[in-house]
Image (cartoon, helix red, strand yellow):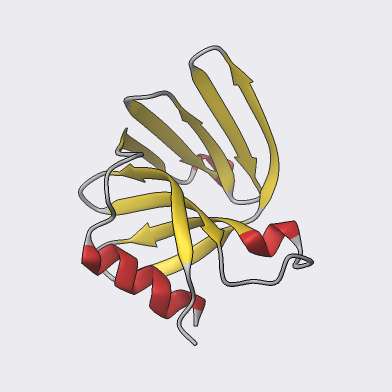
Length: 113
């Protein structure tokens, strides 16, 4: 069966996407870490990596997410993802609410299989 999911957050630049998805094909008693997933997609290689969620914070318009692999800060328009040990920093645009392009959706679906 093909995995079913809804995109909750969609952050993107020319080379990468960071998405939070909610799986809708899992049983009600599935672990919350399986139902809600943050994913990092390299658009050039089509490689997808799960981000291990640690904690979150929000203050007004700014959202923050802390992962084992790095730190994400975003608002309604832009985002910054800083990889662990400052090994990379990515500026992204917030496209939340926009339909995922078919290529990205297909890549995520294949990853979830």
